[in-house]
Each structure stands twice: as structure tokens, then as C-alpha cells.
Image (cartoon, rainbow, N blue to C red; front, side, top):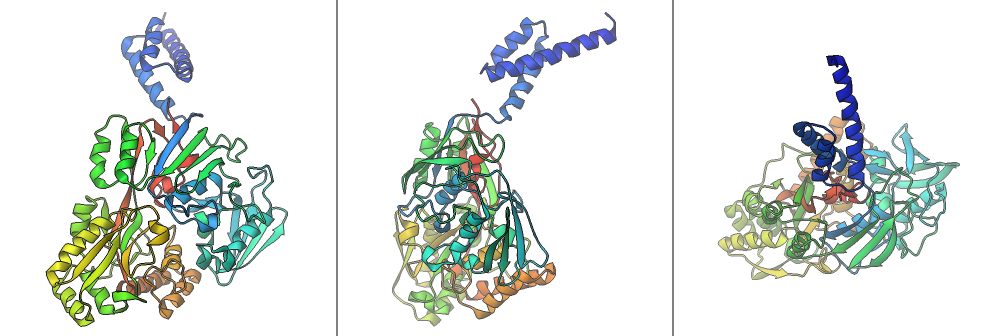
Length: 540
């Protein structure tokens, strides 16, 4: 046989062998089994080993259908909900992306992509037209219609709904059906970020007229099988999902476990396949255990010291400044977050955001200034400070603050609350405490939800007419330079006047079994921005 003939023969053998390998993998054969088959067919050992390894690796990256995924989130509350408008924690968001879809979804760069709306457009950022995707059905078989979208968006404006996104929905003037598969949204004032807003968790689309959300009927990749608030949720694959081939899993069980050690132990013992929100101290334990890995997502998440300006010592601006000057941010970044964070500056826009104000002078720990403002405030005696493992790192941050405060004669009394019920009963309620803010898809959404004067989640009750005016003006400003200046002015106002101390922006750290495939970072939060459910699969 000449060289050309030999090459053709080798290529034919290789093609046949490759097809045979992939067929073996589909039947569950191991790499050793495949190697035996190839060598029995006359292939040299080196080539057979290379082909077996390459094929196994390629096949591992091919999504596989089937299997049950067990997930441990870090929040659990009896107030857990199936109503998208009332979702308030990571477990709610994760469950919501299993059951529902929005008009848009946010990709790894937080750019809005078509979802239930196959297209969206506007000529003036005030009137927006959304063309709905055809052939989409709810879990009960009902087709998606414009009426469902009108209802889903407008219900946020009704105070009786008690929507967590009411301050965002207040921008909407009207939502109307403008065609057989078309909806037109008219805003009170222009907002170039509307496609981002409707891609967030609270604006998931539900059936028109829904008042009972106990069945979780949506258009999402999974259907509800079981829901026990504060305990667990079970969902099963929606075989009629509008995205071809998705989802991959048969079933997902989602449990809320507030204790991080319990989550990690459940992962390493094989009881869970994916767990949220690891402490950096745990990372080496995970990485040092065979068959497990860590997903790190850099984002704008932060844990903040909350000093309410309407009650307690926070009503005195000098006390607020004293507490901010007590923060040793670099020590917290290095020793608490173990470097998995970047420094914060008492305003909520992180350095990765295009509107971050880099020129704002960094507030440093200054005991002389802290003591000066404390004495000027007249605050004496013990000051209770509420913290909980529910708010990531808050116990550690509080402990560092307590130790530093002693150096200026301030006694901070730590009150450690259990994670169960913290967000429902403690957050927003205490004069001095801690919050934990998940990443938001845009500066406008973040500032609107947490710092606008009337926002339900305005943690420190910061009220500024100037801030509110800037926020509204920035939405309509198409000149990026001018818009950046407005956001810079807002960051300065928060830095100087709000009762919020932000020592650092945190990376999300999730632990998972190596058999779980398809995970990748999305900076909206951990576990792929809480949207892992339709993207991941289990490798046999």
C-alpha cells in the first residue's frame, strides 16, 4: 500500500473508531473499556489512549439529559414565595428562574437578550415595543398572550400587590396590547435601561389574573412539584419548554440552609451537588477534596453596615461618620474575605461598573476623626449592633468594628441573630445592623431600589431631593459622559450623607461536585446569577 493509500486507511480507521468511541460513551463505558476496544481493533496504544481521552473530554462537555440535582442555597425563610413580585432572597430568585421567564434575560455581560420577547425597540427610550415569541405555553398548556404581559407588568404598580419592585414599576405609565403578539410600554419619562429592568427576577411573566401563586405556573424550564417555604422546593422538567433541547435535568431539589458548615458538609458527603455562598476559609477544604470545585464570580455584591437615619444613634450624622471612620477596610478585605473582594467606599457602585466614580477620595480608618465625631454626637453607653451569618461576613465585620470601637471609648454590643427569619424580621428593622445586597443589573436599578427616597428597601432611610432628581434625569440622558457625571454626583451624596457603610465588594463563591457541568460566572450573583437551572447537567 502506498503512502496515500495508507493515509486514507488510517483516516477511515480513525473515523470509524471515533464513532465507536462516542457510541460506547453514550452506553456508559469507561475510558479503560474504550481503550481495550480500540487496541483490539489494531490501533496503537498511544493513539488509542489519546483518542479515548479526547473523546471522553469532548463528550463530558456535551449536555446530557437526565438526573436529579440537589442544591443548597444560603437563605431560608417562612416568607419564601412563588410570587415573582415578592421575591426577596437568593433562594426565591433561584426558584423563580426555574419556574418563570421574563421578556428579556441578562447575559454574562449583563446585556439584555430576547427571551419571551423575541425583539424590543424604542425610538425615544420612552415608548418601547416588545414583539412576543410565538408558540410559548404556560405549564398548564395556556398560550402566552399580550394580556399576560400587560397584567404581569402593571400589577407591580398596585400598592395592594406589595411588589418589591414597585419603585421600578412606578416609571411605567401604561402597558397595552398593540398587536396580536405585541405589547407597547410607555414610560412616565425616558429610560434607556427598560430592557434591563424587565429582565430582572421580579418582572417574570405570569398568567393574566393570577392571584394564587401556590402552583407556580409559569413558562420556565421546570414545573413545580413541591414547595415548602423555608424548607425545600422540588421542580421537574418542563418537556414543552420553548427553548429547544432545554432543560437537561429531570428534577431539581432546592433547600435553604443558613449554616455554611452544614452546607459544605452536605456537599462533601454527597448529600448536595451545588451549594451557595462559601466563606473564603472553606475554599481550600473544597479544593482539597477530590471531586469538588469552586465557582468564583466577581460582582458588585456587598454587605453593609446600616445606620438608620430616622431612629436611634444614626439620626445623628456625626455618629454615622464616626462609625464609617472606624472601618479598617483593608484588614476586612484581607482577613475576612481572604482577598476575594475589592475595597468599598461607602457607596454602592463597584469598580467594575462603567459608572463607578474612581475619583471619589477613599475613606480610610481614622481613629482621631472617629473619636471627634463620636464626642460631637453625644452618643454614650452601649450601642446594640445586630448581625447574622445570613448577611455574609457581617458577624466578622461586626467583631472587627467592636474591637476598633473600644479604642475610642465606644462600646458596641453585638447581637447575633439566627439566619432563619433574619431577612423577614431583622433586616430594615434595627437602628444599627447589617444588610447584604445582591448584585443588580444596572446602576439605575441598584440606586432606585436601595437609595431613592421612597424605596421599600431604602435601608438607612436616606432621603435627598437632589439625589431623586439626579436619578430621574440620568435615566433619560443619552450622552454617556453627562450620565456618568450624574451617577458620580449620586455616589458622592450617598458617600457623604447616607447611613450606609460599605467596606468591600464581595466575590460570590459556590461549591459544586465535579460531575456538575455547564456552570459559568454571571455577575448578577452566584450560581450563574441564580439562573443555573436551565444551563447545567450531570455527567454520569
